[in-house]
Image 1 (cartoon, rainbow, N blue to C red):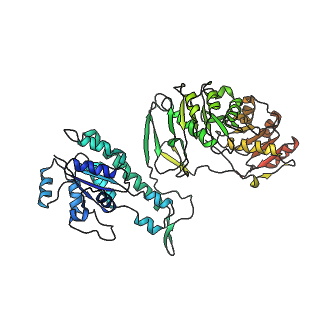
Image 2: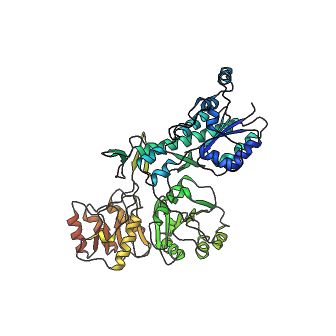
Image 3: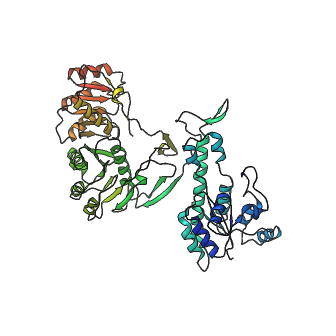
Length: 523
């Protein structure tokens, strides 16, 4: 059947005029609504308004305009059913063969604090209805919701046999994802709405978890395999998030990312962005095995590598400053799987280019970034949701519980050790000096074993180091271990029934000890 009619109604206007002109050139009549029709008319594209097509005006302040049999009959018309053709002919409804619709970004409006009534009016009804109708009838109607697919649509229309089955299915799959994301955003918003004496509004608390959690993610890529070769895997991005994340990184070179690469890049990036100085973090198996601070990225890298060169081999590196040529030259001389940074200088890119397998991830952006959504963990048969651990320690709110107070150098070491311990698998003990980690004890079943393991792993001197514990010391034995290893200061949450015993032990060893009142378990 010759395609003759297309319905265009879009919020995102990029590429709209070129698409419409392409459709007209291919013999289409364009039917359009509101702002889309205005845009096309200004560009000189012939367009029929929806009211003219339906013979019925827009009513209720625009709430009802496309909800009409003349529109939905044309979209839902099955070309393989003669009775459908007869019904449309009887009611003089022409078929609609292409539907190009994308929806107002409701989540953008509510994220900017729109009042409830304004948010309510920005819930699109006609748009999702048209998209779903066209996607349901995808075997006969092409539905496009992404401007990135306009070129593909025009190319498919130029085929002798028209749009092929694979493209029709692709368009429909994307359309249903588009409406699913939209409905999930609305459902999530309404989960936070409460009744007030003056009407309705969003609850002040930001820890509201919806009764039904709708998730909307878009596939970035298939992966070679998961954690192990016998597991299939894929990478999805969170469409509703503006987080400064690995999902937003641009790969400049290197092999395809693996499942484990992405996990380690995420772990490294999240830690390095919490550190204030030029910093480098090296992650191996989702734990930071080396963290260094310096006057620039090279010095930070050298200090991170010194912590545990054996574990650093084949690791994932993250920087919180642009990588310069001197740092790139050093990186080119060792084996690492991937490096992520907020930009790479031109000479640095040239020096890394010969390392064709090295994955170089660029996070060079000046946008404003906000962490959204929940930290989600799958379990068999269910899903755990929690807030992201975004706590940043305020030194002024810490309590020194020992007779001796930390020196300024000890404070620097304590704060570094604490920042790193937050990102180490529990139970976690971290030894550090003022500029680098010295020993990392990760994932042990007892805290005293974590302390012993951290000291055992140390390649640098432990004398005079600070120690961070991600949770309280349940007994004095762990405190005795770190003192025996050479630590002179400790930072921990406190809160154990044995706190008095642990404080007494610290005083016996002449340690300075600080309580934060905050725990950072990471399972």
